[in-house]
Amino acid sequence: MDTLASRLKQARLAAKLSQGQLARLVGVSQGLIGQIESHKNQGSRHITALARAVNVSPDWLETGKGPRQRDTAAGDYPPAPGALTLVETAPGENESEDEYAWLPRLVVELSPRDKKVVWYIDKKGPKQAFNRDWCQSLGVNPINAATLIHRGPSMEPRLNDRDTLLVDHRNTEIVDGKVYVLSYQNELFVKRIFKKIGGGIVVRSDSQDKMRYPDAVVFPDDMEHIEIIARVVGVCGAV
Image (cartoon, rainbow, N blue to C red):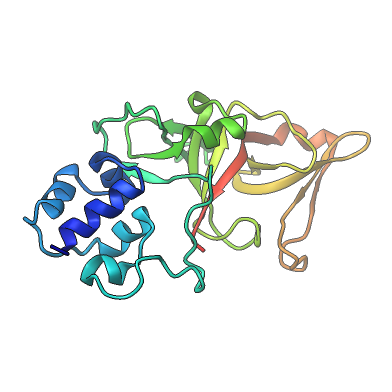
């Protein structure tokens, strides 16, 4: 019988996902996946997310009509092999699956006492999961990694507003042309850094609008006021 239950199970198995893995990708409980596949839940408000996770058309998954394959012509692209997988878990959920590295958030705040930028790794809050093979391909040790939400258009087109950044907070040595999370004069920035001959750095936005986002030159005598918090090594965002 062709039902939502049978279509979801068929697509999940074709995608080589367990019920638990699919639940994490969608951000729901494994129990809900089980209910849908056992005909106890005849519909779901998570159809679009479920379809994306198993790489099928939402219409096909919900009704059985139309092509099974997702429409990639409109820019709804399936994940590339080895690409980042992003899911979120509440504190206390099972985080032991070897396939994923569960990364905490990097939190940056302005200290209310002295108005200086402070940062910490929020190990008790929600975490996001990244494919371990993808992390390894970037040379990232998950122990030293965290996530940060990027804000603003200054680093477009590479980094867009609300992209999730994968950062390495132990990798703070400046490599020419790489992107870093840094604080300067009690402000937080995500910028590309270039070394200057004779010392100092150029802090640059990727945006072509240099009237709005001009280069900032930091001279050697002012380097003590710069704190390199982390290096940006990966990005996940909408298409």
